[in-house]
Length: 450
Image 1: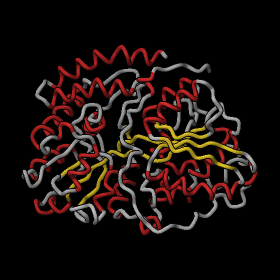
Image 2 (image 1 turned 135 degrees about the horizontal axis):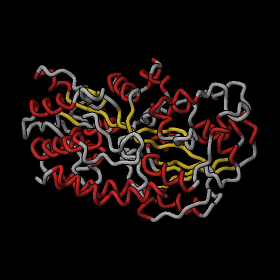
Image 3 (image 1 turned 120 degrees about the vertical axis):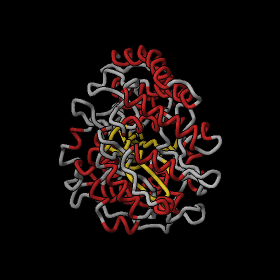
Image 4 (image 1 turned 45 degrees about the vertical axis):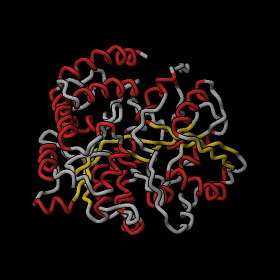
């Protein structure tokens, strides 16, 4: 397939804060994980050199410290490049569009780049490596990644283009102590969410709700509300927009009501960082957002709510059981690289169970290897409470993309983000969503033809 050139706007980030975690767990240095693969020949590419590029993130910082373990295991020399997220999103298309072999393995935001990079031929297909027993350890177990881990990394035709790393997971965080005081049961539906917000709203001491009001950042919240009501961004064929469906319109109305009447002052300008800060300070009762942002809640040096927080999958409805809204960061191999087998050995190692275990505990990464969540040692090693671990595992068991699978994700978020901001300000929900759809529809149709 010939490489295509894309505009800067198409390739710049529209991520969900997946790798921008501001909270680092400080823990004693751990021993290097046991070498995965038993008698597998990890030294088969000894003497090769590879370049790995990843953004700044807590778990990638932990991974950087583990590179000597890989080099000792394999004899492969690794140049590990750490690049700020926005810069790496600009750097990768330039390198790949030029068919440069300068990078061997790179971290890819699949919820933003999957369709763009796949159409351009910028991902090395991984099936032949996974299926080769000489290149993949016998205990690797690709199926262990579960539906949340494999969905974003696979194309419709079954081609595997990346291996799951961290998952952004839309879920539900709430003040369990305030719920108990009001006799409220844990929230499982959107109706219960709204009822809890109203029951617990007691400003200025406690605001019932906090959300992302900032345009563009507000899309995952509205999207998860829509999904919770039984709707979705696209139809099953992914060729028709559903942004004006009854569920999408009602979700926008609910979102606007909660933002306007039950959020803290200034929340129309909030992104997830401000929501996280407000919740940590104890002034928020309910926060539906990505559950990886909960780490500061359990830090006694930062939090006023430690031990008081409940965790659950995102609320659903009679049409949709509680779920996890997913976005995925993954490892991919440059198809123009010169050392692909060595690059694959690195990919297999970094996504092996022992390495994932450490990245998920020390690096606060939400990985998708299902067996780890069932491991008692994981619960002991993790700083987050078992309720958080159980909620993550449950949400991962029913994953739904929290962003639309469209080629021009940034423009989708910009256009519909403005519509949502207008709705919060008092505009009619259906009118604004219809206007946004008329604006985005030509862009969407063009993307389908590329």
